[in-house]
Length: 332
Image (tube, rainbow, N blue to C red; front, side, top):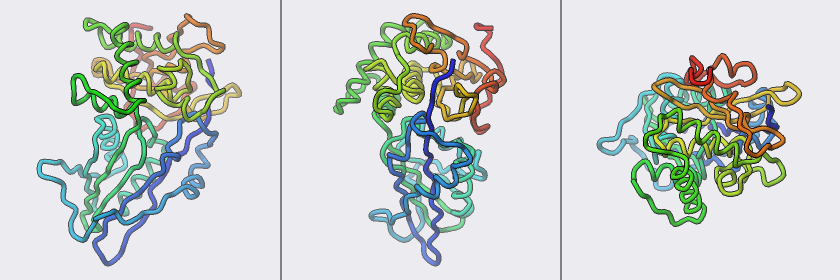
């Protein structure tokens, strides 16, 4: 079942190295560049020109001075020797909803090269990212870099649950999200459920209670709030809503930004999920399991807990993401 999708922009780091001095810099990536995987039409071959056209400049970080950038006591510095290393650090940081991470590379141009490799591969995406991504670095060898993250409303709610049993919120959107997620979990998630049963329950809930639509604001349709509050959304909204409930329920879940066939058999940008059950990763595409036109209570499970081999028929994604080596035997 095809879902009409539209593309996404991925911002890239501008290569900036201040010669002759020890410098710190900060990259402001405008939130408007972190768009839904279903909000614009963009061919992968066009990424280079998009990146060039949409780069935000490196600006001096407020208060940054000369000297070595040193992590606080007790903070780990991750050594980066490849773009795969950088991908793992970024994924772990974003899905632990960390405020910042410290990495170290031999020299700064290596970092920009690794980042650009991830960008071209489509391995950088916007799930739960909000506001600005900031980067501070010292121009030394080895070079220490601080990555500073901020999160959208859904990411803020998930992050709070990782550190608190009963978090409270003061921002209206976060209060609503918290109430909706809590209500859904109380009705559909039981303590005695297996991880697969949790995945199946929320997969089915979202399909029954959500209508795929293109008739409203596309940025809003790309949010978990649109899906959970208004019962309508696009692929990024489905994926973030599913991931939010799964993560808070204790099931390791990621959002994948890649491509999938449209009705004319063309690859167009699309977002879905990966879940980890019993130590094994599986693909889940809630959007594609939601029939069009909407049929209310009808639920499909064709794209529930599937392998790479199954998804390769109509999905395309970066091989930086975890391998999904088998189909869940429950559905085969």
